[in-house]
Length: 225
Image (cartoon, rainbow, N blue to C red):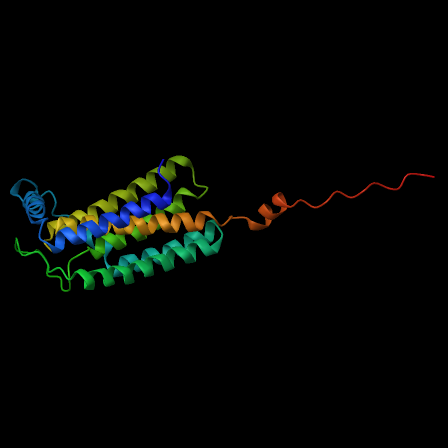
């Protein structure tokens, strides 16, 4: 299995590559084909609930997930993991805004948008922050003492939510598919870094210290004579 540093490096390289391709308009054909498919009459009504799902990646929802991550992390211990999760989500928001200003890609104009969004398009903030918020929570759930089936089910649902948030941004006409893809990858990189950093901290440092440096055995009573 590839190491975390390698996956992080590949993810960063992928986002940079997408940014270059987007800036040179080399992704136009790909974006147009995906947008046309998502907004086609065959699936337009089927995907209409995405107008509600997209709110799960909004600022208020991501903020709520930061609070949930803090509480859940503190509950399963150590509390630093929960705090790190909340701060990771905040940092992701700042990084995403910086990337938007750097690339300065305009919003899609291929189809009439269902809603109107302002600001730049690349990468998709809903997709990136959704990946980070629900991804951090998935890491915490996976490390919890919940039954295995419950952990698998929760992580699966969180993954589906992240996917639907990204698709909703395309269906609503406010993001190109490459915006969403970049958001997912950038968010995934941040989650990997969070998971790697928090993995190095033992959940029970005192117990670990005892195991690593056991107290010396007391000597028995002195022999007679």
